[in-house]
Length: 449
Image 1 (cartoon, one colour):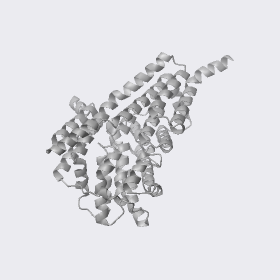
Image 2 (cartoon, helix red, strand yellow):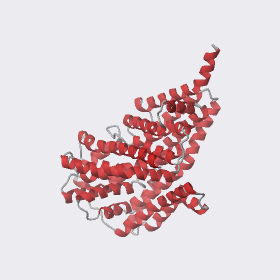
Image 3 (cartoon, helix red, strand yellow):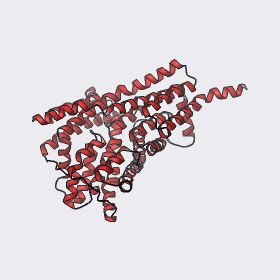
Image 4 (cartoon, helix red, strand yellow):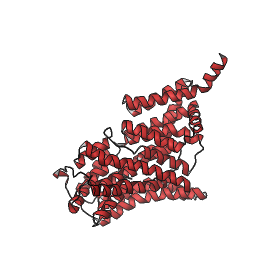
Protein backbone atom coordinates (compact mmCIF):
# COMPACT_ATOMS: atom_id res chain seq x y z
CA UNK A 1 0.00 0.00 0.00
CA UNK A 2 2.84 2.33 0.88
CA UNK A 3 4.48 1.65 -2.47
CA UNK A 4 1.22 2.50 -4.27
CA UNK A 5 0.96 5.78 -2.38
CA UNK A 6 4.57 6.62 -3.18
CA UNK A 7 4.01 5.73 -6.85
CA UNK A 8 0.89 7.90 -6.99
CA UNK A 9 2.69 10.84 -5.42
CA UNK A 10 5.61 10.48 -7.84
CA UNK A 11 3.45 10.30 -10.96
CA UNK A 12 0.60 12.57 -9.84
CA UNK A 13 1.95 15.61 -11.76
CA UNK A 14 2.23 13.56 -14.97
CA UNK A 15 -1.28 12.14 -14.60
CA UNK A 16 -2.60 15.64 -13.90
CA UNK A 17 -0.83 16.97 -17.00
CA UNK A 18 -2.27 14.19 -19.17
CA UNK A 19 -5.78 14.77 -17.81
CA UNK A 20 -5.39 18.52 -18.28
CA UNK A 21 -4.19 18.14 -21.88
CA UNK A 22 -6.96 15.68 -22.71
CA UNK A 23 -9.52 18.00 -21.15
CA UNK A 24 -8.14 21.00 -23.02
CA UNK A 25 -8.30 19.24 -26.37
CA UNK A 26 -11.81 17.97 -25.62
CA UNK A 27 -13.03 21.44 -24.70
CA UNK A 28 -11.56 23.05 -27.82
CA UNK A 29 -12.07 20.30 -30.38
CA UNK A 30 -15.27 18.54 -29.24
CA UNK A 31 -17.22 21.00 -27.12
CA UNK A 32 -16.05 24.03 -29.18
CA UNK A 33 -15.45 26.06 -26.03
CA UNK A 34 -13.68 29.38 -26.51
CA UNK A 35 -9.90 28.77 -26.48
CA UNK A 36 -9.26 31.51 -23.89
CA UNK A 37 -11.70 30.00 -21.38
CA UNK A 38 -10.62 26.43 -22.16
CA UNK A 39 -6.95 27.20 -21.52
CA UNK A 40 -7.71 28.89 -18.19
CA UNK A 41 -9.92 25.99 -17.04
CA UNK A 42 -7.26 23.48 -18.07
CA UNK A 43 -4.55 25.43 -16.26
CA UNK A 44 -6.51 25.63 -12.99
CA UNK A 45 -7.63 22.00 -13.13
CA UNK A 46 -4.14 20.70 -13.94
CA UNK A 47 -2.59 22.58 -11.05
CA UNK A 48 -5.16 21.37 -8.54
CA UNK A 49 -4.99 17.75 -9.77
CA UNK A 50 -1.20 17.88 -9.52
CA UNK A 51 -1.51 18.60 -5.81
CA UNK A 52 -0.48 22.25 -5.83
CA UNK A 53 -1.92 24.52 -3.19
CA UNK A 54 -4.85 26.54 -4.63
CA UNK A 55 -2.98 29.77 -3.91
CA UNK A 56 0.07 28.43 -5.76
CA UNK A 57 -2.11 27.47 -8.72
CA UNK A 58 -3.54 30.97 -8.95
CA UNK A 59 -0.05 32.46 -8.69
CA UNK A 60 1.20 30.21 -11.51
CA UNK A 61 -1.70 31.28 -13.72
CA UNK A 62 -1.09 34.94 -12.93
CA UNK A 63 2.66 34.72 -13.45
CA UNK A 64 2.32 32.80 -16.70
CA UNK A 65 -0.29 35.20 -18.07
CA UNK A 66 1.67 38.31 -17.13
CA UNK A 67 5.04 36.91 -18.14
CA UNK A 68 3.96 36.26 -21.71
CA UNK A 69 1.89 39.40 -22.26
CA UNK A 70 4.58 41.68 -20.83
CA UNK A 71 6.50 41.04 -24.05
CA UNK A 72 3.82 40.06 -26.55
CA UNK A 73 1.31 42.85 -26.00
CA UNK A 74 3.76 45.61 -26.93
CA UNK A 75 4.91 43.85 -30.11
CA UNK A 76 1.41 42.95 -31.28
CA UNK A 77 0.21 46.48 -30.59
CA UNK A 78 3.06 48.15 -32.45
CA UNK A 79 2.72 45.67 -35.31
CA UNK A 80 -0.98 46.51 -35.62
CA UNK A 81 -0.21 50.23 -35.74
CA UNK A 82 2.43 49.72 -38.43
CA UNK A 83 -0.02 47.68 -40.47
CA UNK A 84 -2.65 50.41 -40.14
CA UNK A 85 -0.27 53.03 -41.55
CA UNK A 86 0.53 50.78 -44.51
CA UNK A 87 -3.11 49.96 -45.19
CA UNK A 88 -4.63 53.43 -44.72
CA UNK A 89 -1.94 55.24 -46.71
CA UNK A 90 -2.23 52.86 -49.66
CA UNK A 91 1.42 51.94 -49.17
CA UNK A 92 0.78 48.18 -49.07
CA UNK A 93 -1.24 48.29 -52.31
CA UNK A 94 1.34 50.51 -54.02
CA UNK A 95 4.12 48.14 -52.95
CA UNK A 96 2.19 45.20 -54.40
CA UNK A 97 1.71 47.01 -57.71
CA UNK A 98 5.40 47.93 -57.85
CA UNK A 99 6.53 44.34 -57.26
CA UNK A 100 4.21 42.92 -59.92
CA UNK A 101 4.88 45.72 -62.42
CA UNK A 102 4.30 44.84 -66.08
CA UNK A 103 5.52 41.26 -65.85
CA UNK A 104 4.03 38.49 -67.97
CA UNK A 105 1.66 36.00 -66.34
CA UNK A 106 4.32 33.49 -65.16
CA UNK A 107 6.68 35.97 -63.47
CA UNK A 108 3.68 37.97 -62.22
CA UNK A 109 2.40 34.84 -60.48
CA UNK A 110 5.74 34.46 -58.70
CA UNK A 111 5.78 38.17 -57.89
CA UNK A 112 2.34 37.88 -56.25
CA UNK A 113 3.79 35.29 -53.87
CA UNK A 114 6.45 37.77 -52.77
CA UNK A 115 3.76 40.45 -52.47
CA UNK A 116 1.87 38.25 -50.01
CA UNK A 117 5.05 37.40 -48.11
CA UNK A 118 5.99 41.06 -47.62
CA UNK A 119 2.54 42.55 -47.06
CA UNK A 120 1.42 39.97 -44.48
CA UNK A 121 4.35 40.80 -42.17
CA UNK A 122 2.60 43.94 -40.87
CA UNK A 123 -1.05 43.17 -41.74
CA UNK A 124 -3.38 40.24 -41.04
CA UNK A 125 -4.16 37.50 -43.59
CA UNK A 126 -7.73 38.63 -44.26
CA UNK A 127 -6.76 42.30 -44.52
CA UNK A 128 -4.06 41.45 -47.06
CA UNK A 129 -6.49 39.47 -49.24
CA UNK A 130 -9.19 42.15 -49.14
CA UNK A 131 -6.64 44.90 -49.81
CA UNK A 132 -4.99 43.22 -52.80
CA UNK A 133 -7.88 41.36 -54.36
CA UNK A 134 -8.46 44.08 -56.99
CA UNK A 135 -4.89 43.57 -58.20
CA UNK A 136 -5.55 39.85 -58.65
CA UNK A 137 -8.66 40.60 -60.70
CA UNK A 138 -6.81 43.09 -62.90
CA UNK A 139 -3.97 40.63 -63.56
CA UNK A 140 -6.39 37.79 -64.32
CA UNK A 141 -8.33 39.91 -66.81
CA UNK A 142 -5.15 41.08 -68.52
CA UNK A 143 -3.71 37.53 -68.81
CA UNK A 144 -7.01 35.78 -69.58
CA UNK A 145 -6.49 33.31 -66.73
CA UNK A 146 -8.44 32.19 -63.69
CA UNK A 147 -8.02 34.59 -60.73
CA UNK A 148 -6.66 31.66 -58.71
CA UNK A 149 -3.60 31.62 -60.99
CA UNK A 150 -2.48 34.83 -59.27
CA UNK A 151 -4.56 34.35 -56.12
CA UNK A 152 -2.97 31.13 -54.89
CA UNK A 153 0.56 32.64 -54.86
CA UNK A 154 -0.76 35.67 -52.97
CA UNK A 155 -2.62 33.45 -50.50
CA UNK A 156 0.44 31.22 -50.02
CA UNK A 157 2.59 34.27 -49.33
CA UNK A 158 0.03 35.72 -46.91
CA UNK A 159 -0.35 32.40 -45.05
CA UNK A 160 3.41 31.84 -44.85
CA UNK A 161 4.23 35.27 -43.46
CA UNK A 162 1.21 35.13 -41.14
CA UNK A 163 2.47 31.92 -39.52
CA UNK A 164 6.26 32.01 -40.00
CA UNK A 165 7.57 35.58 -39.87
CA UNK A 166 7.37 37.92 -36.84
CA UNK A 167 6.11 40.49 -35.96
CA UNK A 168 2.86 38.70 -36.84
CA UNK A 169 1.25 37.64 -33.53
CA UNK A 170 1.37 33.84 -33.91
CA UNK A 171 5.12 33.25 -34.19
CA UNK A 172 5.85 36.07 -31.72
CA UNK A 173 3.64 34.39 -29.11
CA UNK A 174 5.11 30.93 -29.72
CA UNK A 175 8.65 32.34 -29.57
CA UNK A 176 7.94 33.94 -26.20
CA UNK A 177 6.35 30.78 -24.75
CA UNK A 178 9.28 28.65 -25.90
CA UNK A 179 11.90 31.27 -25.02
CA UNK A 180 13.21 31.65 -28.58
CA UNK A 181 15.22 34.60 -29.89
CA UNK A 182 12.90 36.60 -32.15
CA UNK A 183 15.65 37.49 -34.60
CA UNK A 184 16.55 33.82 -35.11
CA UNK A 185 12.85 33.01 -35.53
CA UNK A 186 12.65 35.62 -38.30
CA UNK A 187 15.64 34.07 -40.08
CA UNK A 188 14.27 30.51 -39.74
CA UNK A 189 10.84 31.73 -40.82
CA UNK A 190 12.26 33.30 -43.97
CA UNK A 191 14.41 30.24 -44.73
CA UNK A 192 11.40 27.93 -44.46
CA UNK A 193 8.84 30.41 -45.75
CA UNK A 194 10.40 31.22 -49.11
CA UNK A 195 10.39 27.65 -50.50
CA UNK A 196 7.01 26.98 -48.86
CA UNK A 197 5.51 30.02 -50.57
CA UNK A 198 7.08 29.22 -53.94
CA UNK A 199 5.94 25.59 -54.01
CA UNK A 200 2.47 26.13 -52.50
CA UNK A 201 1.89 29.29 -54.54
CA UNK A 202 3.27 29.87 -58.04
CA UNK A 203 4.58 26.32 -58.63
CA UNK A 204 1.31 24.69 -57.60
CA UNK A 205 -0.79 27.36 -59.37
CA UNK A 206 1.09 26.97 -62.66
CA UNK A 207 0.92 23.16 -62.47
CA UNK A 208 -2.80 23.24 -61.64
CA UNK A 209 -3.38 25.69 -64.51
CA UNK A 210 -1.70 23.32 -66.98
CA UNK A 211 -3.85 20.46 -65.67
CA UNK A 212 -7.03 22.54 -65.95
CA UNK A 213 -7.74 22.33 -62.23
CA UNK A 214 -8.22 26.05 -61.53
CA UNK A 215 -11.86 27.11 -61.43
CA UNK A 216 -12.66 30.49 -62.98
CA UNK A 217 -14.97 31.35 -60.09
CA UNK A 218 -17.65 34.01 -60.08
CA UNK A 219 -16.10 37.39 -59.32
CA UNK A 220 -18.58 40.11 -58.47
CA UNK A 221 -18.24 43.24 -60.64
CA UNK A 222 -18.08 45.46 -57.55
CA UNK A 223 -14.74 43.86 -56.67
CA UNK A 224 -13.14 44.75 -59.98
CA UNK A 225 -11.44 48.06 -59.26
CA UNK A 226 -7.96 49.25 -60.11
CA UNK A 227 -5.11 49.91 -57.69
CA UNK A 228 -3.18 53.05 -58.63
CA UNK A 229 0.60 52.75 -58.92
CA UNK A 230 2.98 55.03 -57.03
CA UNK A 231 6.64 53.99 -57.02
CA UNK A 232 7.61 56.59 -54.41
CA UNK A 233 4.93 55.42 -52.01
CA UNK A 234 5.93 51.80 -52.62
CA UNK A 235 9.56 52.51 -51.72
CA UNK A 236 8.55 54.31 -48.53
CA UNK A 237 6.26 51.43 -47.54
CA UNK A 238 9.06 48.92 -48.16
CA UNK A 239 11.44 50.91 -45.96
CA UNK A 240 8.89 51.09 -43.13
CA UNK A 241 8.47 47.30 -43.23
CA UNK A 242 12.09 46.22 -43.64
CA UNK A 243 13.92 48.62 -41.29
CA UNK A 244 12.53 47.16 -38.01
CA UNK A 245 13.05 43.61 -39.27
CA UNK A 246 16.63 44.41 -40.25
CA UNK A 247 17.33 45.89 -36.79
CA UNK A 248 15.94 42.82 -34.98
CA UNK A 249 17.83 40.36 -37.18
CA UNK A 250 21.10 42.32 -36.89
CA UNK A 251 20.94 42.23 -33.09
CA UNK A 252 20.16 38.49 -33.11
CA UNK A 253 23.05 37.64 -35.42
CA UNK A 254 25.46 39.86 -33.50
CA UNK A 255 24.61 38.08 -30.24
CA UNK A 256 25.45 34.69 -31.77
CA UNK A 257 29.15 35.51 -32.17
CA UNK A 258 29.99 38.03 -29.47
CA UNK A 259 28.48 40.43 -26.98
CA UNK A 260 27.11 43.20 -29.23
CA UNK A 261 27.45 46.90 -28.49
CA UNK A 262 24.70 48.22 -26.24
CA UNK A 263 23.37 50.42 -29.04
CA UNK A 264 22.88 47.38 -31.32
CA UNK A 265 21.08 45.53 -28.54
CA UNK A 266 18.91 48.57 -27.81
CA UNK A 267 17.96 49.38 -31.40
CA UNK A 268 17.51 45.69 -32.20
CA UNK A 269 15.12 45.01 -29.35
CA UNK A 270 11.68 44.32 -30.88
CA UNK A 271 10.07 47.11 -28.84
CA UNK A 272 12.48 49.76 -30.11
CA UNK A 273 12.75 48.40 -33.64
CA UNK A 274 8.98 48.33 -34.17
CA UNK A 275 8.59 51.73 -32.54
CA UNK A 276 11.14 53.07 -35.05
CA UNK A 277 9.16 51.40 -37.84
CA UNK A 278 5.93 53.02 -36.66
CA UNK A 279 7.65 56.40 -36.42
CA UNK A 280 9.02 56.06 -39.94
CA UNK A 281 5.61 54.99 -41.25
CA UNK A 282 3.92 57.96 -39.57
CA UNK A 283 6.46 60.27 -41.17
CA UNK A 284 6.88 58.90 -44.70
CA UNK A 285 3.37 57.50 -45.23
CA UNK A 286 1.28 60.32 -43.78
CA UNK A 287 -1.61 61.23 -46.11
CA UNK A 288 -1.58 64.73 -47.56
CA UNK A 289 -5.30 65.05 -48.37
CA UNK A 290 -8.21 65.31 -45.95
CA UNK A 291 -9.81 62.06 -47.10
CA UNK A 292 -6.61 60.15 -46.52
CA UNK A 293 -6.14 61.72 -43.09
CA UNK A 294 -9.71 60.82 -42.13
CA UNK A 295 -9.14 57.25 -43.33
CA UNK A 296 -5.95 57.01 -41.27
CA UNK A 297 -7.69 58.41 -38.18
CA UNK A 298 -10.48 55.86 -38.52
CA UNK A 299 -7.96 53.06 -39.06
CA UNK A 300 -5.93 54.02 -36.01
CA UNK A 301 -9.08 53.99 -33.89
CA UNK A 302 -9.76 50.40 -34.96
CA UNK A 303 -6.14 49.21 -35.18
CA UNK A 304 -6.02 47.31 -31.90
CA UNK A 305 -9.48 45.69 -32.07
CA UNK A 306 -8.34 42.46 -33.81
CA UNK A 307 -5.51 41.99 -31.32
CA UNK A 308 -7.68 41.63 -28.20
CA UNK A 309 -8.63 37.98 -28.74
CA UNK A 310 -5.08 37.08 -29.78
CA UNK A 311 -3.62 38.60 -26.63
CA UNK A 312 -6.14 36.88 -24.34
CA UNK A 313 -5.52 33.47 -25.89
CA UNK A 314 -1.77 34.08 -25.80
CA UNK A 315 -1.87 34.97 -22.12
CA UNK A 316 -3.98 31.93 -21.28
CA UNK A 317 -1.53 29.72 -23.20
CA UNK A 318 1.29 31.16 -21.11
CA UNK A 319 -0.68 30.47 -17.93
CA UNK A 320 -1.21 26.81 -18.88
CA UNK A 321 2.47 26.40 -19.71
CA UNK A 322 3.48 27.90 -16.35
CA UNK A 323 1.22 25.51 -14.43
CA UNK A 324 2.80 22.56 -16.27
CA UNK A 325 6.24 23.87 -15.31
CA UNK A 326 5.47 24.67 -11.66
CA UNK A 327 3.64 21.38 -11.04
CA UNK A 328 6.44 19.29 -12.52
CA UNK A 329 3.99 17.57 -14.85
CA UNK A 330 5.49 19.19 -17.92
CA UNK A 331 8.95 17.88 -17.12
CA UNK A 332 7.70 14.32 -16.56
CA UNK A 333 5.64 14.46 -19.76
CA UNK A 334 8.64 15.70 -21.70
CA UNK A 335 10.83 12.92 -20.34
CA UNK A 336 8.29 10.30 -21.46
CA UNK A 337 8.05 11.79 -24.97
CA UNK A 338 11.81 11.99 -25.34
CA UNK A 339 12.21 8.48 -24.00
CA UNK A 340 10.01 7.25 -26.85
CA UNK A 341 12.25 8.99 -29.38
CA UNK A 342 9.54 11.55 -30.19
CA UNK A 343 11.60 14.70 -30.73
CA UNK A 344 10.31 18.11 -29.67
CA UNK A 345 10.35 19.62 -33.17
CA UNK A 346 8.27 16.86 -34.74
CA UNK A 347 6.04 16.73 -31.66
CA UNK A 348 5.34 20.45 -32.00
CA UNK A 349 4.36 20.03 -35.65
CA UNK A 350 2.05 17.08 -34.94
CA UNK A 351 0.24 18.69 -32.00
CA UNK A 352 -0.28 21.95 -33.93
CA UNK A 353 -1.51 20.03 -36.98
CA UNK A 354 -4.00 18.05 -34.88
CA UNK A 355 -5.50 21.18 -33.32
CA UNK A 356 -5.50 23.03 -36.65
CA UNK A 357 -7.38 20.30 -38.51
CA UNK A 358 -9.87 19.84 -35.70
CA UNK A 359 -10.79 23.44 -34.90
CA UNK A 360 -9.55 25.60 -37.79
CA UNK A 361 -7.73 28.55 -36.22
CA UNK A 362 -4.01 28.64 -36.99
CA UNK A 363 -3.33 31.01 -34.08
CA UNK A 364 -5.13 28.80 -31.54
CA UNK A 365 -3.30 25.75 -32.92
CA UNK A 366 0.07 27.48 -32.56
CA UNK A 367 -0.55 28.68 -29.01
CA UNK A 368 -2.00 25.36 -27.85
CA UNK A 369 0.95 23.44 -29.28
CA UNK A 370 3.44 25.90 -27.80
CA UNK A 371 1.98 25.55 -24.30
CA UNK A 372 1.95 21.76 -24.51
CA UNK A 373 5.42 21.40 -26.06
CA UNK A 374 7.36 24.02 -24.10
CA UNK A 375 8.40 21.38 -21.50
CA UNK A 376 9.67 19.20 -24.36
CA UNK A 377 11.97 21.96 -25.55
CA UNK A 378 13.25 22.55 -22.02
CA UNK A 379 13.80 18.85 -21.30
CA UNK A 380 15.62 18.35 -24.59
CA UNK A 381 17.90 21.28 -23.78
CA UNK A 382 17.06 23.13 -27.02
CA UNK A 383 18.80 26.47 -27.40
CA UNK A 384 19.36 29.16 -30.00
CA UNK A 385 18.67 27.96 -33.52
CA UNK A 386 16.97 24.74 -32.36
CA UNK A 387 14.32 26.60 -30.36
CA UNK A 388 13.73 28.91 -33.33
CA UNK A 389 13.33 25.85 -35.58
CA UNK A 390 10.76 24.42 -33.18
CA UNK A 391 8.76 27.66 -33.40
CA UNK A 392 8.60 27.32 -37.19
CA UNK A 393 7.74 23.60 -36.97
CA UNK A 394 4.74 24.51 -34.80
CA UNK A 395 3.82 27.25 -37.29
CA UNK A 396 4.04 24.72 -40.13
CA UNK A 397 1.72 22.31 -38.35
CA UNK A 398 -0.76 25.12 -37.72
CA UNK A 399 -0.80 26.01 -41.44
CA UNK A 400 -1.93 22.74 -42.99
CA UNK A 401 -5.38 21.69 -44.25
CA UNK A 402 -7.41 24.89 -44.16
CA UNK A 403 -10.94 23.55 -44.60
CA UNK A 404 -14.56 24.24 -43.71
CA UNK A 405 -13.97 25.03 -40.01
CA UNK A 406 -11.46 27.77 -40.87
CA UNK A 407 -12.76 31.31 -41.43
CA UNK A 408 -9.98 31.85 -43.97
CA UNK A 409 -11.41 29.01 -46.08
CA UNK A 410 -14.72 30.80 -46.45
CA UNK A 411 -13.03 34.15 -47.06
CA UNK A 412 -11.16 32.64 -50.01
CA UNK A 413 -14.33 30.92 -51.24
CA UNK A 414 -16.32 34.16 -51.10
CA UNK A 415 -13.79 36.43 -52.77
CA UNK A 416 -12.92 34.07 -55.60
CA UNK A 417 -16.51 32.94 -56.10
CA UNK A 418 -15.68 29.26 -55.54
CA UNK A 419 -17.80 26.38 -54.36
CA UNK A 420 -16.61 24.56 -51.22
CA UNK A 421 -15.39 21.70 -53.41
CA UNK A 422 -13.40 24.05 -55.65
CA UNK A 423 -11.90 25.72 -52.58
CA UNK A 424 -10.85 22.33 -51.18
CA UNK A 425 -9.14 21.45 -54.49
CA UNK A 426 -7.20 24.70 -54.58
CA UNK A 427 -6.69 26.60 -51.32
CA UNK A 428 -6.78 23.54 -49.02
CA UNK A 429 -4.07 21.84 -51.06
CA UNK A 430 -2.00 25.03 -51.15
CA UNK A 431 -2.24 25.54 -47.37
CA UNK A 432 -1.19 21.93 -46.79
CA UNK A 433 1.84 22.41 -49.03
CA UNK A 434 2.80 25.48 -47.01
CA UNK A 435 2.92 23.41 -43.82
CA UNK A 436 4.61 20.31 -45.23
CA UNK A 437 7.30 22.19 -47.16
CA UNK A 438 7.93 24.42 -44.14
CA UNK A 439 8.48 21.37 -41.92
CA UNK A 440 10.78 19.65 -44.44
CA UNK A 441 12.91 22.76 -44.87
CA UNK A 442 13.21 23.44 -41.15
CA UNK A 443 14.29 19.81 -40.56
CA UNK A 444 16.92 20.19 -43.29
CA UNK A 445 18.10 23.45 -41.75
CA UNK A 446 18.90 21.47 -38.60
CA UNK A 447 21.36 19.37 -40.59
CA UNK A 448 23.29 22.47 -41.66
CA UNK A 449 23.20 24.80 -38.66
